[in-house]
Length: 242
Image (cartoon, rainbow, N blue to C red; front, side, top):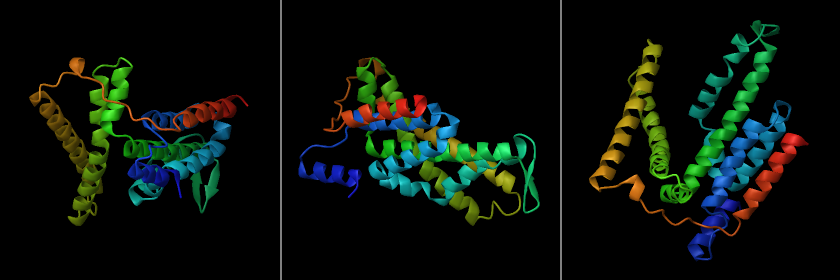
C-alpha cells in the first residue's frame, strides 16, 4: 500500500494524517530543487530518485505522466535541440543530429517529467484554502488568494485543453491546415482560462473580499511533516556537494 492510500485511510478513520500542507510543500520544493540545482552530470540519478519518491507519495500523478498529451508536449520540448543546438555531428537512419542537442533534449525531458509530477501531485494533495492560509501567515497578503486562483485554474486549463483538442480533432482541424488548428487551440485555451479567472475575481468582489482583510485559514498538519523537510535538505546537500 502506498503512502497516499495510507494517508486517505487514516483520514477516513479519523486518526490524523501523515502529511499536511507543510509536508506536501516541502516535497514540492524538493522536486524543483532536485531538477534545478543538482549538477548536470547527476541528472539521471536525480530523476530516478524523484521518480521513486513520486511513485511512493503521488502514484496517481505518476500514472498521469504516461498520458499521450504529456508525452507529446515532452517531445515538442526535447526534440528541437537535436537539430538546432550544436553541430550536426551524428547520424541515425540517415538523419543527422547533434550529440550535444541529444544530451540537452534528454535533460529537458527528464526535468519536464519531474516538474509535471511535482505540480500534479501537489495540486491534487493540497487544497487551495490551506495554501492560501500558509502564504497569508508568512505575511504575503493577497498572494494567497492569487496563488489559490492560479492553482484552481490548473485542473480547469487541463480539462479545457483536452476538450478543445478533442473538438478540434473531431472537426478535422488538424488534417489540412494543422498550423492554424494549433493556433486556434492555444487561443481557445487561453481565452477560457482568462474567462475563468475573471469569473473567480468577480465572485470574490461580489462577496466584498479584500486581500488585506482576509483571515488566514488553518493549516492542515501531519504527523510526518518533518520527514520531507529534513530528508529533502539532506538529499539536496548530498547531491549538490558530494
